[in-house]
Image (cartoon, rainbow, N blue to C red):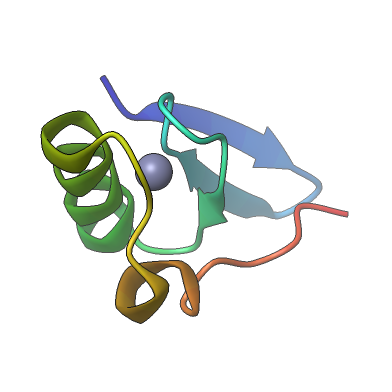
Length: 53
Ligand SMILES: [Zn+2]
């Protein structure tokens, strides 16, 4: 399950497999699906990750 966190005015979506944060739920979902299936991250996906602070 993608985790939703709020920091200040922003909402971030966290992939629970690798803990990367995304501003869009779509990317977080893609990341989590990929992580679960491949047991590793896709650079194509994690390049969309953002810092939460
Ligand atoms: Zn992931």
